[in-house]
Length: 260
Image 1 (cartoon, rainbow, N blue to C red):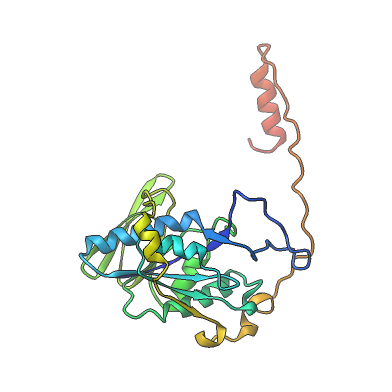
Image 2: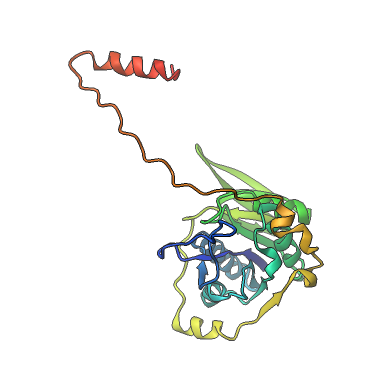
């Protein structure tokens, strides 16, 4: 079974981030790490490949400055190879533009049976890219997977909901987004880390993917960040002392909010 996993390389959340004064976006010119939310998809893919008795896991990522630090972590976990899209024209790309780039990169991987993603990235939180990729590739999509099993040419998924889970299935190939925490990502071994250094990374740009640079980046997104402001401090709440009529005060408070 050949599985593609979309992974994002992000600035380390443990380090203080900085905004570019011109674009007012998060600077990404330093070392990037593997988004923790994507490590679950990598682990799920490795387990599925093992259960199938063979195959390989290919990573697909988009990052500036030919950055591969996060990719090497996923390769050290056991992924076989990766496709990295790096192009200055991608700066400022929105969710749909990202999906276009990743979908085009996925097409470079021959014989992909399954595409896995996280539900959303830790530094973006749009939660729309997986479904956009599926639409662009013309593939079925299942979101919020807490369990995945392959049965012949069908993927069977337990889809997490607020009330439990739904049992869903789709024909392969398909795009499935994986919920964080559903598996325990393995730690890269020393042998895996050393092996990752020589695993192939196919670096491509927009031209290689047949993508018009004007359809991605700031131009393609048609957006501009005008200003960034700190979130207002949380106001102090109201303390209700129960003197026997506390419930009346709470009911009145909720009624004033039009909650009841």
